[in-house]
Length: 295
Image (cartoon, rainbow, N blue to C red; front, side):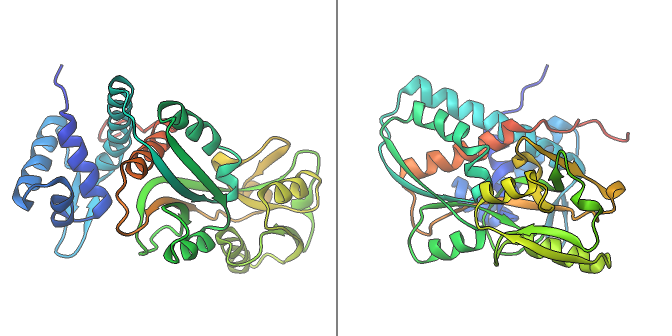
């Protein structure tokens, strides 16, 4: 059984995140030709083509996307093992911003485990809308921000997860059968809000806004009570709420991309550790598809 060297996987992830061999080379401390050789060696080992190369763009192949999930998980476990065994005394403060729905669902578990292995790192976590958090980061308020983006939004960040969007309604209610469709929304500039309104307009489905809340818990409670329906990221759907599909007369609104944004110029050890830990935690939380080809 052949092994995949972690240095090749780390270079692969850097090229994937940067979208460029040149930028990745600067991050891993190698020349562009050396990075190209590493990717070629990795392709030889896994026996698949990982990137589609063109004059102006670098895209992952289907097999490359599959390997990306494995690579992040392998590197996360490698780094976690080293951190635990070395018992590093990393210390400092990290100001983290994240959307409400993630601070209420996945992040407590992720950050709890990070705190156990990094007891000297103080975390300051703030919840808000993604666009609001990114504006605040530009003003120096956050060291790291987890933010949702439109599928192909060219506004930076390190991609860590692609999140399907799902319509939801109360378990014991049929708000989705009403016309106009009653909507539970967050105020602008919420990405879910704009995606819902645009999608319903394109589908020519009449709707009306019946409830507005800036709180994830407030939106969840309103949906659970049958006041209306809303859109949520699949991994953040709470109990007491059921998913709705196109069979229920609601349009498919695709997915959003979750990205990590590190403040420019900030490369403290505590921040870098947290960034890699969050990226690895999301990768480990989702099972990757098979690497098999042709079927």
